[in-house]
Image (cartoon, rainbow, N blue to C red; front, side, top):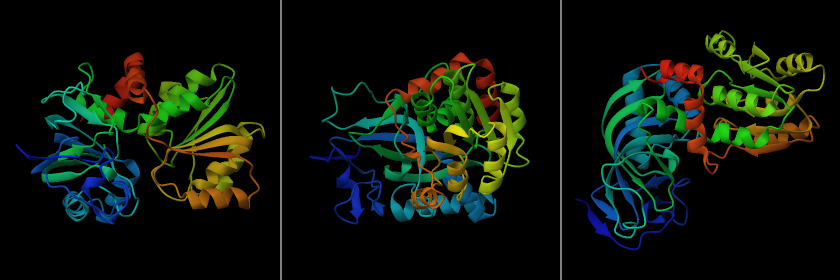
Length: 352
């Protein structure tokens, strides 16, 4: 059993090594010594990490697609930072595992018990993590099977893993649960909605939710990358009025195509779910004046977005992709339960 320490900060600042005075997410380094447990922490035996898409894409590119090099980069990042916090993208991901121990201050006030299977709903970029070994890297799903331990802080969010959904599927869905939940808030009946990265893990869920909310009078346009085989999967689901394959870095072409499809109206809402940089301007140009752009992508530069909108004279509201929305875990898992075709697609992709 770990040594118990008292008076931990609810936000986890007691685990910050450097620099002083910051919260765990922006910290350069966290204390990932699992031989000690503060009285307001939950210790987790970790089964798998789901590296967020922008981060995993960057790591794969850096490693040239070599699995052993990806392992080395992940282990090196965690060794240097005490957490899986990509120094290039600034993002992390989330994990699943089993509760190993609960700090004394949380006992009685938490519904968790040792042995409970959970998914953390906070970023790996703020989660103290110690990896003993990496057992497998799945290049297609961004999932990394490990043996290790992690800490969930007192204010950290989690979800119990459901009995009716395989853990790999639940991990994939919960990783992006904030996207469909925010889509449900933002889409109104009759809206025209454009989704960049529509063929990906978060994008398909956003298409499903946008179709539900926009209704028969609305329009849902999904944009996938050129030569992306996922476009056929999205078309087969029948969620979109149009599925087009465009280079999201080519803003003028994206604008012209959406201008054509919408008859010059452009989109009431653009949702950006891509995992590559430099797609801010396309998102902005496809949106009508006084419309909204929701940047769920962790590859977004908010400097480029703000100055880019100004540069083309677009009066639009731009929203940061908060990964947390109240009830988002239940909502996302509910979509998988209510749609058999959606579940079949996600199982084929993420339950290898």
